[in-house]
Image (cartoon, rainbow, N blue to C red; front, side):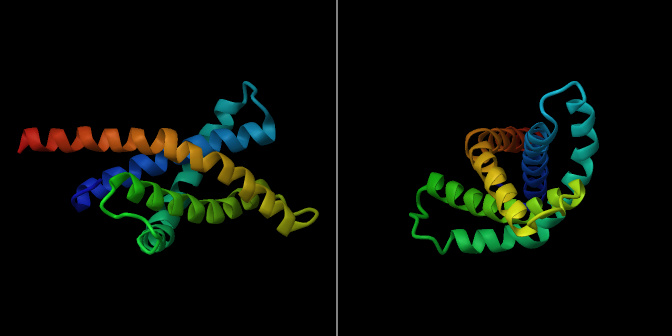
Length: 155
């Protein structure tokens, strides 16, 4: 895990960009299907999604998620339990906020807005949690470890 502000920024940027990329691909594929236009749609959707997600993460979700995770009945001496608790709380918060962003950018205001939102939250949560726990989290931690090792070598 990050040990200083520079590492925290690196880790946040890696984690956020990978999650936004994965979730952008997933959501566009759900709406448009897997077509040749997917790459163009993902490219156009990634940058605004990344900026919003980064702000939402840093300003709102991360501080609350970390506080909440450490109030859960976990063994804080076990790093895996801490990682799963923090990342699970982060996923919950980000899904709640970014599902609103997705609905707004796609203009889904017809019918029952609350029902549409709950369906989007469910779909996003079902993808975001395994994506975080099985792919993005481990890759981001590996990249952070490599970054930390390079910092030690140059010191």
